[in-house]
Image (cartoon, rainbow, N blue to C red):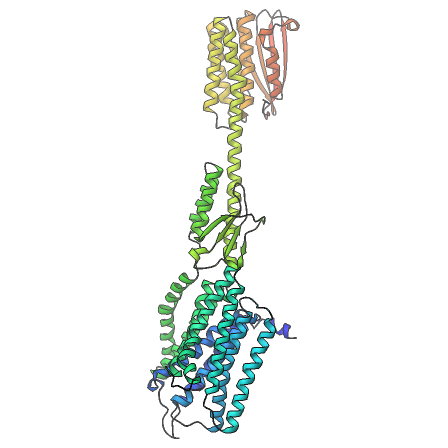
Length: 631
C-alpha cells in the first residue's frame, strides 16, 4: 500500500518541496505571531521591523536549513541519506525557532507552552547531533556495522536527552548543562564518523571528495556553535558567543551542501535539481513580495501583485539565468559550430589528423581535466564514477576515450551530456559514411584513369613505338594525344555525351580520310541518346579508329560509309568501304580484328565482319546502357 501511494501522480518533487516550504512558512508565521502579539490585551501588534536583528538570524537559519534539506529530500525521497539530511533540517528549525518566544516576545509564555518550547529546543539540538552521526555512518559510504552503530547512537543520545528532560521537569529546573554536554559528545562522534568516511573512501575519489566537502561543512557549521557556545556551557563557563548569534553557523552546513550539490553531486542530484529550485524560488518570491506590499506598504492587492510580478520579471529572472549559467555548464559550442567541426573531422587529411581533431572537439565541448584513451568495449557513451567520467565509445578511425572532471573539475557529467555525445557520434557516423563514399569515388576514378592509361594510352604508344610505318606511327600518336586529352578533360565525369563523342569522331575520321584522298559518307540517325560510360566511349572510339585504319592501310578504297541507326535501346554501327576486301579467315596480326571484337564484347555488343571483292563491311550492334569494360 505504501509503495502504491509513493507512485501517486500528485507526489512530484515540486509538491514535496511545496509541502516542506509550507511547513516552514507556518512555523515562521507562528514564531512571528508570538513576537508581534502585544504584552497586554487591547494593545496593537508591533511590527517585525521593530524586533532585534538577531531574530532574523534565527529565522533565516532555521527556515534556510529546512528549505535546503527539504529540497534534497523532495528530489530523492527514498534515499536514506536524503531522509536523514531532511530530518537534520527539521531539527535545526526546531532548536532555532523554539527559543524565539523567550527572547523576543513582549507577552509572557505560559508554563505549558514554555515546557513544550524547552522540550522542542532540547530535542531538536539532540536529534540534530544524532542524525548527523547516523548520516556520516551511512553516507557517502556505509561503514562496517552501520546499522548497529546507528542504533547505538539513537539509543544512547536519544535516551540520555529523554532522561535529562524528564529529570529536569520533575525537579522543576532546566539549566541546559547536560544538553550542552550531549551536543559536545555528539560533535566528537561526528568528527570520528567523518574521519572514518575519509578512510573508507580512500579508493573512491568521488566519494572521498563528498566525504571531505560535506564533513568540513558540518564541522565548520556545527563546530562553530559547539566551540563558542556548547563547550563553555558544558564547562559551566559563560559562552564566548550567545546561542542566538552562534546559531548562524548552522546555516554554513546547508549553504555548503547547496554548493556541493553542483561541485560534487552530493546526494546524486543533477542539473534538474537547480531548475526545480529556481522555479519554486520564483513563485515563493512572488508571493512574499505581494504579501509584503499589501501588509507593510498598504497597497491594493491588484497593484501589489502587478509590482511583484514586474520585480520578479526584471530582477529575479535575469539573476536566475546568470546563476544558472554559472551552476549548469553547457557544451562550449553552438549547433552550427558543432556541425562544421564534425565535417572538418570527417574530412581530415589522415586518421591521425582526424583523431586529433576529434579529441580537440571533445575538449572544447566539455573542457575536461583529462582525456585518456579508454578500453571500454561498450558501443554507447556512458557515465562512470557517478559523473566523474564520461566514456566515449570507439568509432570509425577513433579509439574509445575517457573524459574526466569536466569544466576543469567544476562540475560532473550528467545524462544530458551522454545524450549530447550520442547525437555527436550519430552525426560523426554519417559524416564518415560521406567521406568513405567520397574516398571510394576517388579510388574508382583513379582506377579508371589507370585502366585507361594502361589499356589505351600505353598500348597505343607501344604500338607506335614498334611500328615501322611512319605514317602509321603519326596516326597512332595523334590518336593517343586525343585519348589522353579526353581522359584529362573528362576525368570527373561519370559518363560522356554520345552526341559530342560522335561529332568528335566524325571530325577526326574526316581529317584522316581526307589526308589519303578517301571520301567520307557519315550518317547519324541515333537522335537524342543517353550518355555512355567513359570506358564504353573509349571502346566505341577504338573500334571505329581501328576500322578506319584498316581501310586506309589495306583496302585501296575511294569511299568509306559510316552509318548509325537506333532501334529502341540498341544502336547499329555500320562501317563499309568500296575497296578490294580481304580473306577474313586468313587475316594477319596487324589488322586488329581480334581487338575490335574484344572491345565489342565489353560494350555488351556483337561485331561481325564481311569482306568481298567489292569491299569490307563491319557491323556493330550494342546497347546504349552499356556496362563498364572490365580491366
